[in-house]
Length: 135
Image (tube, rainbow, N blue to C red; front, side, top):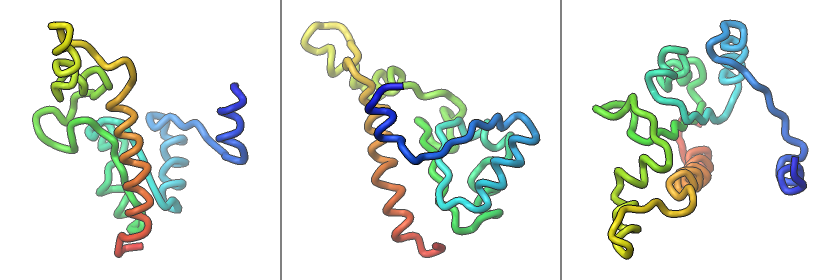
């Protein structure tokens, strides 16, 4: 592990759980029962199959801020599709825009969509913690 990683993550605790394992799923649900925030980047239908959808978790913990970072929303024709950075760059037209100088679509040489999504979460979650009336 690099020095920057170790510095930024000092004093943090983590746990690895497999939501497909019944014992691990129960442990995850117990954590969510007492959590302030639940963040996921898993497709909505997969979360629902595991009982980790917003309706289920928020029924168990009404104070929970549920944040789902998915590319195509909770419902609609693309909801079940994965959304990787290159897919978002292509579907948003960003790859086309980037390629206008060369005549061929090209991806931006960074994970721009992933970074924007992460920054959006970083701003939205503290706002929800501060302003949600159920808290």
